[in-house]
Image 1 (cartoon, helix red, strand yellow):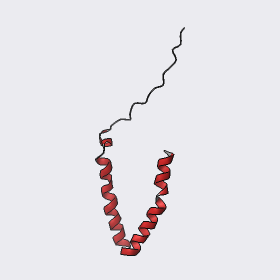
Image 2 (cartoon, helix red, strand yellow; image 1 turned 60 degrees about the vertical axis):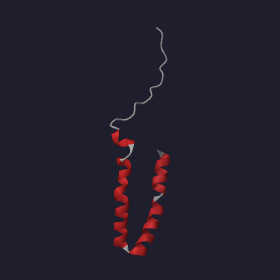
Image 3 (cartoon, helix red, strand yellow; image 1 turned 90 degrees about the horizontal axis):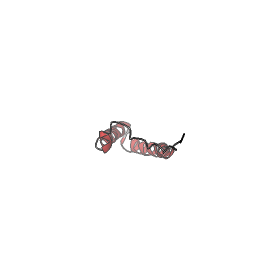
Image 4 (cartoon, rainbow, N blue to C red; image 1 turned 180 degrees about the vertical axis):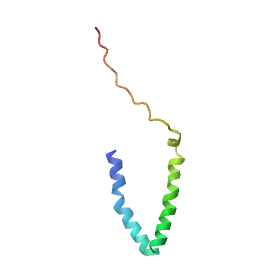
Length: 70
């Protein structure tokens, strides 16, 4: 979880920099439309993945319990 959070939060400065460069190059309003066009279809990655069919959490592996004699 920590690795995922580091990767997600670590890319925010890079995205901000690239967004600023794009906005300077084409203007703010076109940059927002371009990014909307890029982000909106990105949900298809999850929609087309096998996770779409998952309804429950996977069963956790239960540790073996010591058999008490008595």
